[in-house]
Length: 183
Image (cartoon, rainbow, N blue to C red; front, side, top):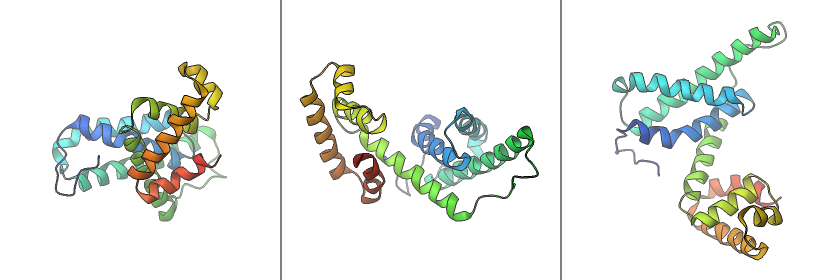
């Protein structure tokens, strides 16, 4: 659950659990692909944040701004570094992505974070079936075999998960989830 604007974030573990998946998604969109580099960038950001945590306000907005800005610039640095390694300096631009792209990446990361947060509130069986079906793109038959349950149980768990998500998710998060559901 996201803290209110007046709540202070005090635990590094609390901050890490809240922002790690969102920042990985943000970094993946900034770098253009989800690779080991994405997790390296986010983990390095958290290492630096941990060292400087006493110098950063514990206000949720300050923490969020610090982390997103740090990841953004780490991604820019990673882009430049990769260009040097690949020896394509002449053909690749070093310019920062447009502000709209950055904002879109932040919004996408926040919505993905909201979806994952909401999935944690579902009953474990529902959440597992939902993840396997919509995120891992397994068929009902494959899910049934993997979890050793009937296909009808898979179908009913998927329906139950969707019904619960519809009631718990904000409209913008539900809109991002629709492409998964329409496959």
